[in-house]
Structure formats: structure tokens, C-alpha cells
Length: 135
Image (cartoon, rainbow, N blue to C red; front, side, top):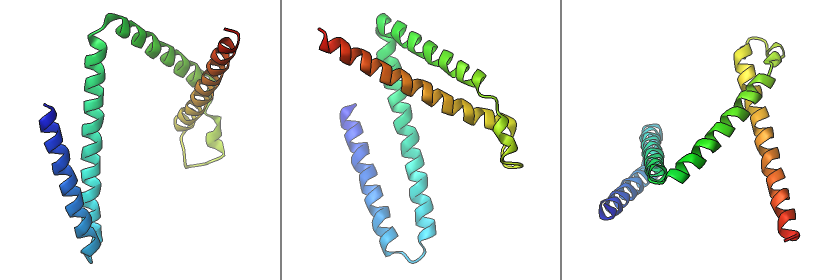
């Protein structure tokens, strides 16, 4: 399996190098850029799927990891739901015609979710830093 992956990586590197050289020497660069962007999208999708598959296989093999992952996903979902409940979507009146109330609420939810997660991360860093000092 690892030998196949190495061959695939080398092949993709060669394809990328060829496309790069063609891009530098071509007069009509828009078509080449489109091809390169499509290649990037395909590689990104493959990378994401492989990473997700290996993560799921790794988690499914151990019951304790599965429980911890479930708890983490549940806590994240609760924080996301609280963020969605707090966001009111009233900012759409400022940007008339550019965003709907639902879109404004989704943006607000994302901002509140970021704030909550950042605050939780800072609080945990402080807690464990203080705990380490007094240990």
C-alpha cells in the first residue's frame, strides 16, 4: 500500500511540474490555470477523504477513543446550538439586499461560536498552566 502511495505522489508531482512549466511557457494561461485549479480541487478532495477515512478507522478500532470523540462532538454541537440561539440575524437591515436574515444569523452564529471556542481554549490553557505551576 505504501509503495502505491509513493508512486501516486511521484506521479502527481510530475504532473504538477509539467503543468507548471507549461504555464510559464504558454501565452494563453487561463486554460492552464483552470486545469491546475481543477487538479488542486481533486487533490484536496482526495486528501480530505483519505484523512477522514483513516481517522474513522482509527477511532472505530478503540472503544475509549470512540466515546471521547462522541463526547467532543456532542459538546461542540451544544456550543454551536447555543451560538445559533444567541445570534439574532438583525444585522441584515444594515446590508439591504445583500444578505438575508438567515444568512445574517448564520454569520452571527459563526462569530459567536468562534468567540466561545476561543474563550474555552484560553480558559483551559490558563487552568492547566496554573495547575502545572502549583504541582
